[in-house]
Length: 496
Image (tube, rainbow, N blue to C red; front, side, top):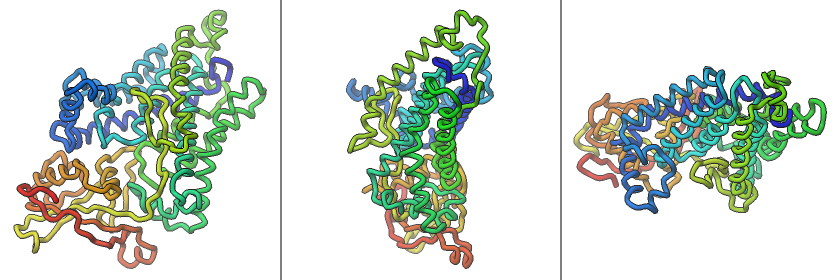
């Protein structure tokens, strides 16, 4: 690090720009495939209804975050156009094309991605109410100011990425320490692999590991989130302490965070949360001279470390803006009632992060079944299969992350609430209508596009099968505690 220019962080910039763009690519593809049946004109929670509510009074309008669809009337077609633009821009940035030009070109591309995705997330309601949505927005905004390949990365922006990773990791660690006792007595991971929202193909093997390993996992998590993040800032000491040690410390801190995140990738499906953390942690990886660029006019640029004066001014202003916005998030980290995944401004910059402050001990799944028989009391019931959430006890969970299965994730939250959400009732209606876009969100429609006469919902407790149970009948899951949740309901009869 050389004053205003982070001359040893060219590799970090490459990973950040291309990695963040790749995450936007996944996010826009996910939205293109799922937004319309979930939130479109005929979605489970129609956006048009939300926008009409917001426009009904100025006070309501102020509650809605910035979105293009305040000025442009929402239609499913316009949503698709926005997604395709986002996909195209993301692909160009992944390929590194805009980065070969003037720094304002990748800046403009990332800002378009940032505001385009904010326009979607702002109207996404509960289906976009996840911490990684605001994380992607903040990462995209910061990536806009990393510059192009003909100049070194600005030090101010690299440090802002360290501050983002610090809030992400340290915030998650503090949430755990203030949360359930299971994190403090190191037993949380004895349950988490089994009860997490969407297990992956290796989650069962991870769950069956011995207790001492799970305690070591929890201890390692505390170390990686509560201790290591402070060392991300070690390269700053290189401004005063000669030698490679500060940079090595920062790189080692990044490596530890990356290693813990890759373990989470292997054992779960957390959309792009873990991959985003991996990409962002690379901001602290130092490679000597990787960002050094020979100045075409050394006399004019020497004071700014190789940065054009206008670009130095822009990035400095961005740094001061984020610092000014960061006070609520900093205070939140040490507050007794720490907020998790909270934004303190309309633009979702300098947010508070955190996840899984408590770990559920049992896994409850709502299973939706349908029948074509007239008499529901004597009917043969067939089960709808979801892509990611557990259902068929013999199906091995699949790996979907960083792709985000929004409906499956919301299904996990249902048993944690006190009543059925509005969107779930709408889902049952769409299944009774055999609505094709809704059925496309599922893995298995047992009626192959035909309308069922009745649907019902049954609650089960799920747990991973032991090794002996797996050998005996090939089951991955064991389910019991069967309990009727929604009695048979047809189109002419509302759900109970």
